[in-house]
Image (cartoon, rainbow, N blue to C red; front, side, top):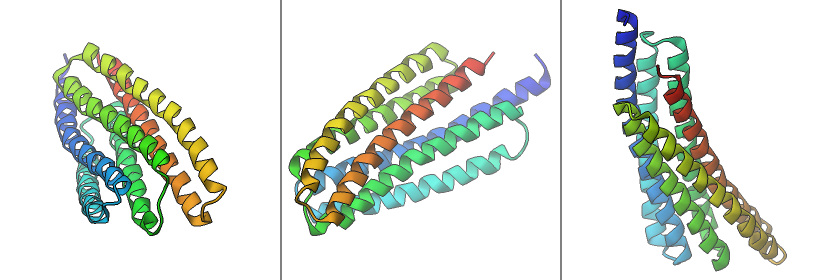
Amino acid sequence: MSTWFWVSRIREKETLTLYLEHAKLVLGVLEHAHRALQAYMSSDKQTLEVEWREVFRLEREADNVKRNIIMDLASGLLHPVDREELIRLILVSDDVASRAKAWTRRLELAVYDTIPHNVLELLVKMSNSVLEAYKLIVEATSKLASGDKKGVLELCNRIESYEEEVDDLRVNALKEVYKYCDSAKTSMCILAKEIVDLVEEASDKCEDVADVLRSITLLRV
């Protein structure tokens, strides 16, 4: 084993440890964004505001960790392919958090009216699936850092299943949104549709993270 290979693998493990810190912050963002949907469905504006502040705070902390990781990767001690994959991992994970922040922000804008309960029920189910998928991402990252390749690949398959579940829920949610749009204010119609799309996009980004984890796992020798 070459000295370069040995040093590169140590640096990669250190970066994955930092990424795990970022992933846990993103998980916190998703937990509070999910609770924000539940608060909105319960017409609990005070709790919605509290959850929004937590989403904002944790997403900002995740951004700081992201920047630290990118600076760390700039040291040049990793093979370019390894560096590229790890950068993709952190950036796509960041996309998950940004979608959760965006849907929570739109809930804040929608408090002046009420999105129908049947739409909200589907949104809560969708966001719960996103949350469960990201829990698996955190677990898969821990397995990757410990060298459990089989465990990573099995968890990535489960993440993909959650994405498929969200896709099915989105179709039903959009049907209800379009019915709502026949009589709703234009602004509320737009907000409801955007929230559905943002939750679905967060799910897609979880699948993208799983794909990068697979790639990193399969590239390991």
